[in-house]
Length: 68
Image (cartoon, rainbow, N blue to C red):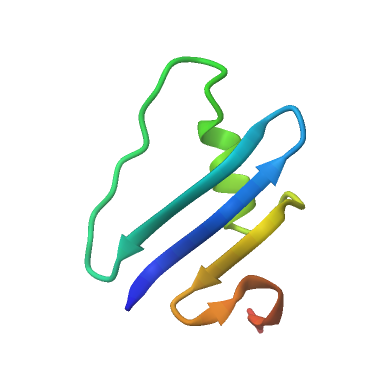
């Protein structure tokens, strides 16, 4: 099972059809030049920025996760 899975995540003008999977227990880094979408990706993965596509934390779709 993956800790985080993004499938076809898109934010118009910022991210285009991005897919990735980070396995559980993996330490991942995010690097790239200014303006490459690192902060946008993190905002999408955290549910702070609306995006099309699918975002799963573990096996749960992001909109269904309760943080309370």
